[in-house]
Image: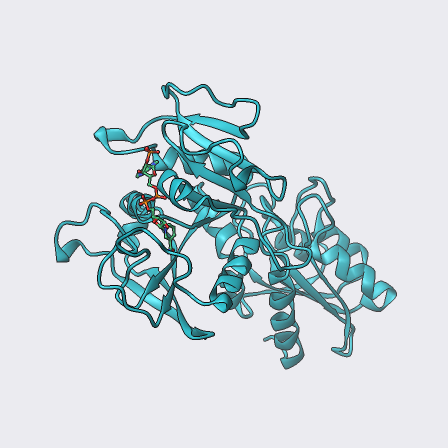
Length: 370
Ligand SMILES: NC(=O)c1ccc[n+]([C@@H]2O[C@H](COP(=O)([O-])OP(=O)(O)OC[C@H]3O[C@@H](n4cnc5c(N)ncnc54)[C@H](OP(=O)(O)O)[C@@H]3O)[C@@H](O)[C@H]2O)c1
């Protein structure tokens, strides 16, 4: 049984892990707190970036000799493999740790086995403390490991009557400055921010993170089938963050031209559908190390993601504004009758300035299996 000090340490480890969201891919976020033999915190650490030391190593360094005979509390099973850094399970043994409490088992074939290695070395091991919270904090990475594609959050900003632009297509700004600042936090936590060619043409978006010190910039991605929406001088072409344009393999356009960014050629949607094949887009992003995507629209591309079963979380910012006309947040998602509606569970509602932020996740397992 875990002690109260270990539970408090796990809460702190989960908080520490969250600091690195958006900075560790293709690795998970991990936090670690080391307690000495009396249960006092003597070291804390988190995995800050891929290729850098793991959480356990940071925490053990901070603890030094005080780790001997103590307990390491970790959000994820300590790894058992030598990659760019050595196995954490061995580092814990070498530091003289007597007990390890971890929340979530490591599901990857290469890293798993850490608990076994620890037990074989005589360390007491306990799994499952605050597992739900720790899983939620690592949901993007865990989803990516399980499904082989990035975790997708679809974010939109709408009026209370569900419109994302007015009838004349003007849309700046529906939501408040507070909501827009909050979106920068979502971007900072994502590895890639994706928009369709329609949004590119209408808004000339910038898509980089602003106003968050030390944030890792996401890859900015435009899904532009014919390669005609991104024009020289577009704001996403500045050097604030990397940019990728996805175009059809057979698109007539010649990309990349000198002023255009990195481009990838993908198959068109199957079955005569519009645009590019969404699973192929997600595969390509996964191959590039992207584990979490923030889909920022617009409604047409979001509809295609929903139809492909590729939205894991919805974050809607609802402003107390009515328009009565104009495009709605989601366009055709291949749902023709109420029985096929994509039903969600609301996981959070928060007031952000004058607006309401609603977070929801699909509640049917079949959706994710599509
Ligand atoms: N308030 C908000 O949260 C928000 C967010 C974003 C946008 N918006 C607004 O939304 C409007 C633009 O909406 P939109 O629906 O035209 O833009 P969109 O969803 O950004 O882009 C749609 C375009 O993406 C391309 N595409 C590539 N692959 C696709 C696929 N598999 N399925 C569907 N489309 C694919 C298609 O054009 P090609 O095949 O020709 O490339 C399609 O026409 C603007 O008024 C913008 O201001 C609002």
